[in-house]
Image (cartoon, rainbow, N blue to C red; front, side, top):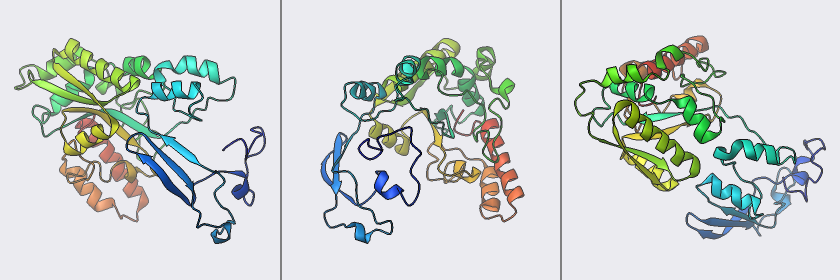
Length: 320
């Protein structure tokens, strides 16, 4: 909220009916300037009046200027130079940033229900082999990667649906089976045809994500003697490469839209799912989704999604 509307950050947060006059929020703004992939400017719609609003409110800002910056390190420097009003933290510098800005009240921590992992395109052999996908995951020390590239900001996990979401599991569920184990990974790929080819790993440009890409590349080289080419691209290009399925390896994941296990599955893991660009295809998952999408027995529905979560993990269904 802009300080000219809510100057005292120690005051109680506004509640209805005070919200319309005290907060800035989405409203009838119009686009007045746009530079593709760079910036946009929004200004109040001159044809709008607070008389039209059920809350009796009109836009409270004269102008909103948005800038798109793929690299959080760049956006954080822009914030520090008073070029931005807020920025996501560059997690490679998390400890120093928190120490600097937590005392001033400028640092805010937001915990989201989300899971990230290494997505693998099962349409590209030998990634159609479950043992190969499992080996790739077990050859990487994910906790070390989190510490090096994300300042420890994430929690290492072995479940797709996270703890706290119905159908999910504890963070360390099956950790003994799926933990970092280079020797076991080497045994899984021994003698596999096609394992000596070049694998394409697509990451978004940026300090954190390029660090992750380099870490995965080196881990697979050191522990499995694999040839991995990292391609760091702009955000829109990365998204297009995912949709086009022009990748072998793709660090990605999901952030919850609404608190129900179906949000973690529908569209993502059906054989014909619109977001299933890693080509996971498990008949049991398809049948469980068909049987339970509209199941009014909620206990049975949740149990079905719990089983789907188990299949995703055990089959390395497009993601480790």
